[in-house]
Length: 422
Length: 208
Image 1 (spheres, each protein chain N blue to C red):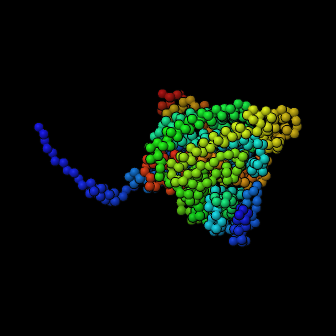
Image 2 (cartoon, chains in turn orange, yellow):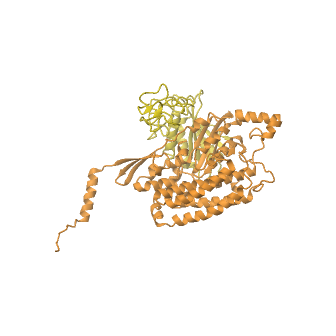
């Protein structure tokens, strides 16, 4: 037996108006604390969000949970002793940090443009490997926070190979401390260039796969497009650097604009975005990895001395007052013994003066300002940490976005707290 | 136009306020005599000379000298690629200079960091809070008279007050604000253990 029931269809316009009115009356904002222990904040970033429903009205980033006082520590040790601390700044690209720091001290010594060519090529190669490694982690974590877990597995497989290359060169996978003031800890092993070539071959496939998984993926594009928009002027005003600056369309890359090492001998392009949204920053990083592959391939072919260094090209500056002598010289010659003793006990004797050197790190411009009063320790060493400065824009970037957009914006900025908090 | 020409233009504009530009390793430094003028100089450098990018602000503690502080600004013009370093001294009694936040918004966090680490205040900064150290921390750790090992402060050295699950077990330190020698992990139950910390679950140094 059928029953008839009357149902009431409410006027949807009236209901919407009622909700709006209710919100106006309440006008209540909720404060949501995100972090310092939250998977999407990639470390110990804390953000205090003020929410109106699901929309962010105010964001106050709180950094410093990983502050170790690296600048204070640097004032209390010799220049060489600080190299291991640079591993722990951006711990996703320790090799690039090593190179940046060594170049800054060498600039103070006035030898940064007199490095042996083989040393320059190896430094460029490890920097570019670090760039790929850092971008891979950034991309994997970014995609995973957005819901695409497959990419994470893919990029971590490739990162593992870069760790193997770092281990072959320096003996350590993460805490590489590969550079020394005026050179390198040691030459790369004879098979290293072939290993790099092999990696590039495999990485090209993986990168293409990452592109097919993400670049035209409807979900990915919808979530990234028109989100976290940074205009050109805003990017410069906030001092952004690296892919975040270039994603906004500013053609600024220290490798091109202030060439150091052997970058002017290498052929590569810099990737620049147009809209400055999260999708552009993603594309810039993808293209940078491709350009890093180009640089690595050229370096493998052009490295002075070849892969095996049969012509015994030096990797250290030939100055006994800067780099350590070989062990057999120390045991047989008085002068080298004295040099070794002085270098180890007092450090490299730097002239008084002040220099700033900026290095194009994966995260942006990693700069060291060294104020020296002479002697083996810096009087003041200031680290310009790109992640710290890139994070300062969050307060401007977040308002207006939805709470589910927070991991996307954070992932697109690609920061690391070890560097931000120093 | 080179950075040296820009430096000379600033000198021509502000006259006796600015010392002769110095060059070291290809970098131009300009010293500004009166820290109160730093905002005007920075504003001029940005609006007239195109230094639109503030790379960094750092500070130096010239301990034992007068004036004690030097604040260092690294400027860059993105279009021209020029770089310039501006320096100004601030005395310890004053410990304050104008904020350049209206010129570059990136100065916000840089100035907060200088304030946090050195204790130099920036007048006109809207939100001059500590940034790396926590709110309420009494010292400025990058000062030369602050010891490397740190100083005890009123806040506890550890964040937790409850007994940790493995406390007293192997390789676990006890929560305390004492230094690492006193918290040596091999010492399972210290003789002077605070009864509030070592809880009843510990019998003869072992977990019940």
